[in-house]
Image (cartoon, protein in one colour):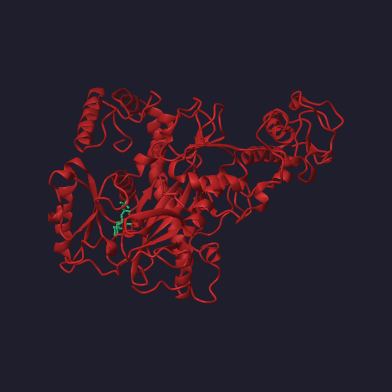
Length: 609
Ligand code: ADP
């Protein structure tokens, strides 16, 4: 195997090289809220400045105290507390329950230390601000704060569900969704797979395809195999009990050092409603460990040549552990971009294509995610808000077109790898490449969802929206007549008046943000919303579906909801009676059930709707 080359001389530092500064295909727009282009929403006013803005209902500094002081000791205006850092130095510390973090624990701990937030490794009797789950939303019953998983995400990104969701969008917008290989769902679409392949071969006899069969719910390359013909599918037994996706195999991937590699990119879904998406500026490239050759009957079984999974290639004698992010079998994606750029590749275009792949994929997932969300967290009931880091696996074709392989709801956040000390004796050692990328992603996700920052932002927005802000003395903003100031004032009060006595969660040191690097997560939605909003058609269908679900807490529409929908939309008439509506409902239910779609709950899913 050729040694992995270092990035060329004169190449900009990896971190800068990969950033798509205002990609031409996706012109930079100002995100809502008037943030200047390029400024991340996470980079709101520094805490010290935000903390100084005070909006008080009634009275100026010398006026009546107003309700907002809520019996706490009032300080003389302008008198600073906490020494060097001033008023804002006394910040309530964000509390994080890490008791369910599992394999992301190490990276989370480092992030929390950097942020100087308070970790509760064994959980906490009182509510925490943030709950970090290692597997799913349901790892624990949470009724407040924020949790790092969306309900239904694990289900939505399983191979079959993802393929179905993308297929729906491919049917509606074929050109926009051409970044996902043609796929068939087994066993139900096996006859369709056979027919379509035969037709394509008939129309183009030179077409010599390869297909990859991936068991649903599998991961780390488990159970994956390549075939040259539909008749090679192992339909015996297991396929019936273990459904799978069969996909066109991308035969001409981009190679580096003659090796196939894929990209793991980290994407933060910060909010579903409104939709907010961020992409990490750097990711990981995972390399195969045998030089690549286009698939032939002879090499189809060579997993180290065709599958880029780290978990497989680590067992190859050729796997190279490297402390250098530019070499080895796992490297930073920015180092690849740097190399491509030095070869004259249009890296800006590549980034812009990747951004649009990510946005379009999430748009395909949101309708059903919203159904899950309302089912687990019905409107009006107490519940947490959610955010989630997703792992996007992307393969670059030889022509630099990015293709989506899969989305991981629980991307590995391990920052160590196994090393074989002597035959059969393994030890976990730190992996600098993983640590560099993953800690930044977790830490900056936390910075973006920082509940304190949200409060400060609310206060700031309130102050900006106040018509009558007067007297900017003593570092206070005074609002005399605003009727809506109470909430904002209280939030601000909490930040300003928080004293150490009796309140354990205060950090009396300088803002931890001050020493941190700029955010590694870049907002792409709503930043580029204008270009993608037309694709959010199914979202509107989902809103309608959710409205007619009737009983909260379900994901399926029953016969009564279906009737109400038909009636309210005035779809029935003399030719389409309510009896026919019921028959139609039963007919659709039978059809979907026969396709093996989950029917634990009665009723029909959004997909059929
Ligand atoms: P898993 O969840 O088991 O990792 P993936 O869908 O990521 O399943 O596939 C495993 C590996 O197989 C990928 O990392 C990639 O190297 C390869 N692969 C998957 N799909 C394709 C495809 N359509 N064309 C070429 N290679 C693929």
